[in-house]
Length: 274
Image (cartoon, rainbow, N blue to C red):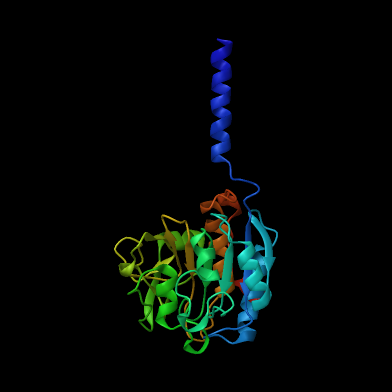
């Protein structure tokens, strides 16, 4: 009987260990605002400040950095480790130090190596990986995802908040996006992980989404998109923070999210931060 009890205790301990987030698996975040597209640098910094203020010191979040391209290059190299789920936040531009301009290195760039290791890029404002003054155009996203035909057109596409969006991103309201993700063009192990707003208000059956997270089922790479809009005054910082704290850190195993501790952002809080 004693042997049976010991065996049960061992199995229970293993189960708890498997279900408990890894305390060492914290998510480091680099917020890049030195160059921007479709949003002024001052406005991008204001949104970045809101994001940084909301996530710094929270459970599951490690180091939060807001520096320039030189620091980003070194940081990206240092964080290119398998499935550590770190995040680089961009405001419409990806600098050439990690993705050479003109798609000069379509395979094996610092940015792609980082992504393929199972890390994450988040982007707001202009087209994902488009680059300042059209330096990469459509090829940036196509090369980074290894999906030759994927595009992000469709100005003023109506987005309706999904049930998941209402629960996890309380700041998010219905709006119009200019560069949504084309869910119907996903291929090569990429899937829609979660949609906070889509053209239908539901994840299933939708063809466009923003905000949303795409995940590569083979590498665990993720792309987080929120408010890809042209010089539009959207609560970018708040919604990105809600996505990270209310969903992402639990999804990657950095920290379980207690429903009672999810960010119930109120419009009064938003105004006080701006």
